[in-house]
Image (tube, rainbow, N blue to C red; front, top):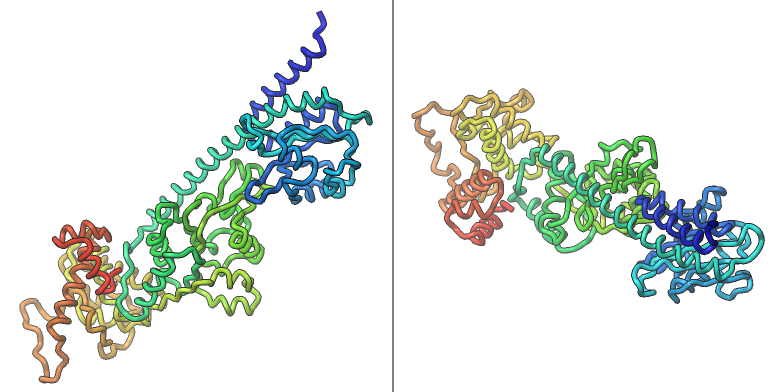
Length: 542
């Protein structure tokens, strides 16, 4: 017995519903929906428009590439969600059949102008999840019968029936995409955390006691309480990333990810994908979707190190992120909202780079809303003894050596040296000296590199009176008495300052032993955590 027309229609609906449900990739699903709807209703064209609720706009997530120029224009087109026949179907929550669209007052002619086609007959059906019209998130449309006729109520009923399966399939694909993005974000975060661990972070807290570093700490505290973009400027090795991490850890975003990207280390052709993500197949080697750093850091902080090295083309895209809070992943045709705070750093004079035309002036002002200048080590020599002490403790522990301290002449050379590589260079010098020293011996001049031993000694640089030099070992034989003062006028440190210096040094050593864990350090010192924090503040240890 021949199958009736009604039974054939029901079977067709069932087959289409199953076919739609089988596709979980939105980029494959929507073109498939459009193709099958055109075939089923013998239509010249079909389209899916989705709602952007934040902007109250409808957009095309996909258009046919029959006309590349028209397709590009349509992908960029945004329609007010309350305009046109599509807007009416979305707002009213029911399908609309129009036989002569050109004379319908609701018709929105912009799409015809972009595609150079003439819309005659049209059916528009809202895509709804649930039973409430307020659950509409887009519309499904077919335009113009190929045979020149008009769509009828049977066609309208068929499209209404198929719209339910389309809505469920699109929602499932969206949810699947979110899960896939979440998985990719977690992979990105884990990868970043592994890199951070491999980086062997040397400080848990920044060290500084002079006026320059006190100003840095003050600015960091202010920056942590707001969402303002921060530009950290300083020479190589001054600890710019430590400042960024300090701001992040003291802010309300400290429970979300912190992801650092060195703009100079990522090849120019991969930087856009690294920051904004990409769709699978968008370029050679893109075998899977990637969310990119900005989506992986949702709710947290993105730190752009060496931002001055960012190519000009990427500077324009970064400016859009800062102004619009949205990104365009590579291969995507519509934007994705992001919620991140951007901190950046550079070792260059960005104002000079702007004058040279190497950096966009509008981006410079956007990034530099809150500048923090990190002084070079040669401008904060009073911190060198404490840094040396911290590094001796660190590297002696790693090499399982007991290093009682450093002799005064060796420390004098370190204080007098200009340290072009700043704290990073000082760290490397101490690591080398500890490696060369024997277990139980202090660091001496012969353990220092030729670079330091070659400088002409100068009179000892006067340090701040509240800073105690770390474990200074006079260059005398064991058992000898320290040399007596040459005169009654020789400088004598007041007892109070001496005691404070000893206490500061000891607290710094204990904090280093417990890797900066204030609670454990306070417990070991048998004082309260607030009391320890107050001492750390007074001694410039935080």
